[in-house]
Length: 400
Image 1 (cartoon, rainbow, N blue to C red):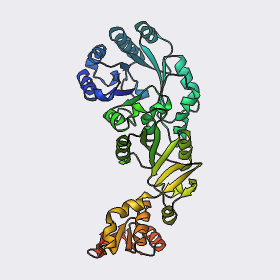
Image 2: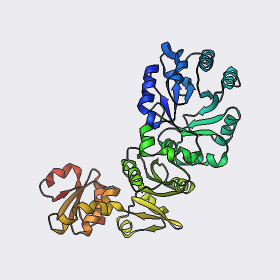
Image 3: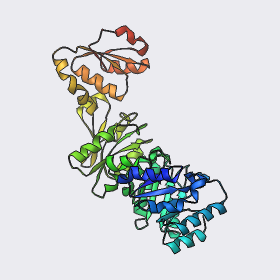
Image 4: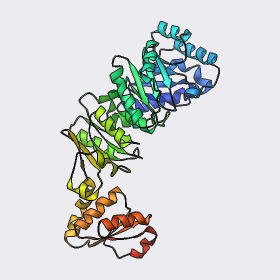
């Protein structure tokens, strides 16, 4: 299920959020702590106003919420909501012992979500904690903060370690975005979404539903992606996912924020990733993990596309041909004989090599002169500092 976490300050605002996103969601979470104090005691009526199940949550400050009153007041408010309303689930934190909230929930037939929140990292005993949560409720929920790909691997292991446990597994923050999209690969009952990032890493429900089709992912879905740091700004998912849909291919393309390339290859094996794009700063570093590379990659020393082939990973560079394609006729006709390339990173390496292989005279311009020099010497071309770019005005056929 895709669950919309409601953030409206009033019940009317929350209802409007549900109506706006209804076609994208299966369930919603009413965050009582985000509703104004004047309306909190009327919140029991909310489930009767919508046509989807509602999770009741009253989150404490220590767990990332806004409720700062006493624990006694919090329990009383939760119990009042359960007794008067028709909620489908209630969220109770892991440190709350068996209590009157549980008794009322059981009497009303409300399923209990036992939740653990960790904004610092991923607990070492994560599997044992999930099991304990499940033993004390109907659904075990963990919302933790992976600090790198190694932590993400641990979250994807949960489905293997605890296959029969009904659970909600969430990785918060940048490294956890892939777990929110691939929640079904983690064996998670649902993923949380919101239009205004109620929690770190939230994705709008329309994006989860329409772009990623996250709720349709199954065992046969092929996983692809893009790695980099930063990477969450990438437009690639907005290109490849619609492309997969157009050719009716059961596949998904996901951004992976990566801190360690070696760890990412372990994750790739764990979830059987079929291929991935590579962006800064890993176009060079990824080479050491490849069993086969194309001629362009060998020449350029940079790779932007990795695919799984029998028994190994193969690296390619589509920057090279993608850059040349729209200007090939201009080069062949002689309209482009000289070019200035601004930048000296992975993409610039591909571009300079492509131009030099077509006998175009190139000048590399860069903020850091040493990097411009290194790239220029490797390709037998000129170089200069970015502050001198004005000296080349009207002297170049092409500026990249």
